[in-house]
Length: 283
Ligand SMILES: NC(=O)c1ccc[n+]([C@@H]2O[C@H](COP(=O)([O-])OP(=O)(O)OC[C@H]3O[C@@H](n4cnc5c(N)ncnc54)[C@H](OP(=O)(O)O)[C@@H]3O)[C@@H](O)[C@H]2O)c1
Image (cartoon, rainbow, N blue to C red; front, side, top):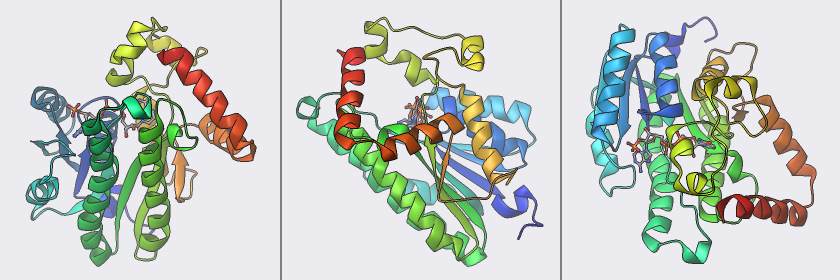
């Protein structure tokens, strides 16, 4: 197993749900640079096609796309048709619904889509995609979670709860699928300067600082990380570059240190402090 090349272990195709922008397109670049063909999904066709064209121009791999909402009721059939007959060796579930409001003020359709996109769809797609990987005795399943899944947080209650589900799903699958040669785990992402991070209307309305590329590289106080760095760190794990694959990996060691501190803190203090932080920014 350890003698396999990346493409032998995770090829021939990587399916990245939410692969058109930010962290998702960084994952796509990393996979293509290792010789994997790409299956990319997102809702906005134009953005998705532009990303696919860019990847085709940079890497000698095949790139296929399908525009779909991860919350639509027939998503399992749509993805089933998209991957039909292909050897999907790497599945990354990166798309997310991100309701941001007080729980009682969150529109019901957003609460429902939070469950569909962040819980139901990753569960059922993992079921469909992991079975053939187990039969082949190789492959990878990566569920993208968030630091917001570690602490119940005012204004992000439903999102954090759903990402906590993904966190535990990926962790447990590491053990179950690992027995069959499939690398499954959760990748916990911290603040990252993706288009949705920059374009968040609340962030803009609150006139919060916007950081340039250099400030992100230098990690100026409050600066998010660069999507390409978050993408590279995941693939360092998949490359087994100084890392043994485990149930949970973080996009940066500082996030892992924060998680460890939070684990030892009083939940009462942690939750109220986190809520004060989000309230001061969001309202
Ligand atoms: N950015 C951060 O600071 C941060 C922090 C912690 C965790 N994360 C996690 O990292 C992942 C990526 O975050 P991001 O900031 O890059 O998110 P994003 O901008 O909302 O979306 C990333 C990708 O998913 C697609 N997508 C979003 N919602 C979708 C839906 N309902 N159906 C299908 N595709 C959808 C987007 O394209 P379309 O919009 O065209 O569909 C895009 O390709 C998410 O799982 C998020 O929870 C991000």
